[in-house]
Image (cartoon, rainbow, N blue to C red):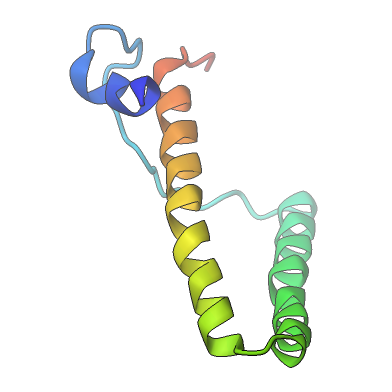
Length: 94
C-alpha cells in the first residue's frame, strides 16, 4: 500500500521531475522487438486453448471461469500499480 501511495503522497521523494504512471511509447522496430512481440503474442493466444480444456472439465464453466477472472483482475491491477510506483520512485539512469 505504501508503494501505491508513494507517488501521490510524497512527490519530493520521487527523483524524477514528473510522474507518468503508464507512459505509452512505441518501441524501436528491430529484430529483437519483433521477436519479443511474437513470443508475447504466441503466449497470449495459446491461453485460449487451456480455457476450452478447463471449460470441458468443469461442472459449471461459466460460473467458475467468471469467478476466476473476478479474483485475478484485482490482483493483476495491484501488481501493475505496484510495479509502476516502484519504477516511478527509482532514479533514471539515462
